[in-house]
Every structure is written in C-alpha cells, then in structure tokens.
Image: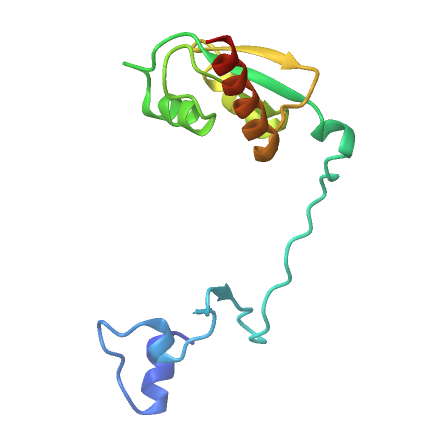
Length: 143
C-alpha cells in the first residue's frame, strides 16, 4: 500500500507540502532519533568493536610544528592545520598521539614537522602561573 492509497482509504487526500510526520506515516524522525518502522521502538545504540585507549597510549604525545605556509593549500589542508592548533609559520603544538591526530598529520605532512615527545606537557595552569611569576621575580632582582 502506498501512502497515497492509505490517505484515500482514510477518507482524505494528501496535501502537496505535507510532511511525512503530519501524514502519520511510520519511520519519521522523532525527537532527533530514528524509530523502527514496524514497532515504533528506538533503535539500539551501535556498540563499537574497537578497544578503548589504554592509559599507556594516553601518555604519548607528539610535537607538531608548521614549517611551510598554508597559503595556496587546499581548504581541507588548511582546516587540518587549524584543527591541529597551527595558525602561524613556525608555531608548534603538543598533541596526544592518537589515530585521528596522526591522520590529520598525514594529510598535511608536507606542511608540518613532527617530533615525538617523551614527557607529557604540563597543562596545569597554576604551575604555569607560578613559573611565570618566578621568572618575573628573577628579572626584577637582576635589574
């Protein structure tokens, strides 16, 4: 049975600009989730077959430095550079060594230089502020 024949059987004709949801057809998107056509039950979430990253792999980092300009590069390459956190020539960032980061690096390998970092970067803002203050204090004492 087609949607038109079900509408005619119900006693009314479908309007041209009427959506599937308004017509009462099954299989519409409901609150951002697809539903099964026959039962109306939400589909189960897909389970990933990939193993989770272990703690050892999260400790590895790479330092990526931009060595060539992105002027004239393809838009996808420029987007990869931005996603890697590189805006200017000579700028470098320390990123976790993960497959998605490695994929972006592979795409722009002609524009960047990669060095594996043994020690993880310090992301603690308090320690960075303390270092900055001690550096400023040592400058003031020298003056």
